[in-house]
Amino acid sequence: MKIVAIGGFFHESNTFNPIITSREDFIIFEGEALYTKGDKYPSAQGIADYFWEREGYRILPLVFARAVPNGEVSLALYLELKARFFELLGDVIPDIFVLPLHGSMRVGKIGSAESDLLLAIKRRYPKVPIVCALDMHATITNTMLECVEALVGYKTAPHTDAWETGQHAARLADMLLSEGKKLCMKAVKLPYLIAGEKSETECSPMRELIAALRHLETEEGVLAASLLLGFPWADTPDNGVTAVVITDNAPDKAELYARDLAQLFTSKKGDFGFSAEADEPLISLRKALAESVKPVFVSDSGDNPTAGSTGDNNSMIALLSHELKEECRTLKILVAGIYDPRAVERCKGQIGSVIELKIGGTYDTKYSQDLVIKGVPLRYVPAFGVYSSELILFQTAEFELIITSKHIGFTGVDMFEALALNYLNMDVIVVKLGYLTPDFLEIAAKHYLALSRGCTDEVLERLKHSGDFEKV
Image (tube, rainbow, N blue to C red; front, side, top):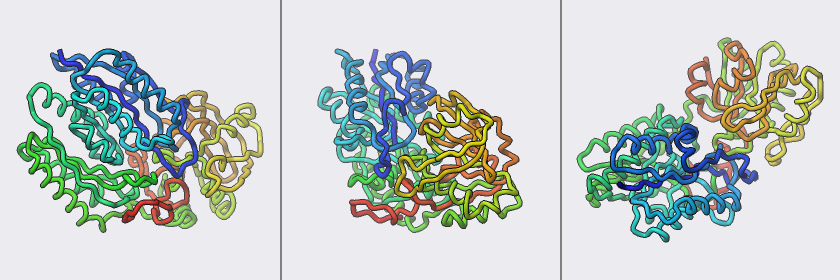
């Protein structure tokens, strides 16, 4: 019976965001809870599902922690999770580690959490192989490459193949343990930073690059091919794009194909662009407000919490409340939304009353301003979604605003439904996102990308990176 140790931490850490991501931001479970909570961590679920269906394996579930992208993770919390990871191993020496990680989790005073964890595993179990499933926006370090037998990343953005990537990682581990294949991994790094919203895999050039990966994986002896794009909203010298190829005991082939992928990527780097019409915020909002179709989505891309921004930037709300207020009052507008726990507390006891509310600008003090809006808290939801955030629906003369008590993403219509919103009848929906999620793509009549300022600024030249990168 071969023992497969599964565990990992999944977080995309934005170093331009001043928030320290803490325990209350994470979903944390361990051991046998994987059997009931694995759906909260799809890549872990994919790994577990693979081995559950095969004889000759025993799964050893460790600790799992996942949070919405945010600022760097608390050092104390990370050290606690890491200690628990090894505590759950006890005296067991597994046959392999198959780890669902993000690849761009960062911890204060440590840096790359993945590098730190993998190095600790390798020092304790030098002969035990490690295979990792990663996010497409993983930042690959030399330490990661030295510690593992295989890295395999998502092939979709928006990311809809996390479970499948877990399965792929598990399959590689199975090949190594049961079939005797020797996993040979080669990687080539490129000094490019790409704004996340230019990496949609249904659009060129990512569509063609992903097709090249899938074609390569049909070649004899090629077990996996990945393009790991790095995370542009982290200031780290390890950043950049990494082409990774894994073969069955064919190092020269892996090296050749990794270089081919890197060359192909370089040849297409000038083709990257936004799939939606992109303008400065005032222009994007004016265009959306003038449309005759509905709902029209406007992405507040500079403050996208699902890419690690603060979620409390109020600049779009300020535009709707002031410069555009007259244009707004004949339309139905929804702003989804803003992270402001103090505003939620203020509203909870005032449902149905007209109040003045200070909103946003608590964490993002660089691009936000002091802003007070007047309106009525209409509805309160006490525990929304997997992170159990409180929600407030606040109505002003110009728009309706969703306020959250926790730093979560604004990614689906389930939030709108929880607040009993007739969202299909909205003229304009302003959402803190970049590219639209599948939920929103399905209902959007049109989409504009507002190049707003913030921790996830899509105009990378406006952010200061200390490394020598070409910003694509």
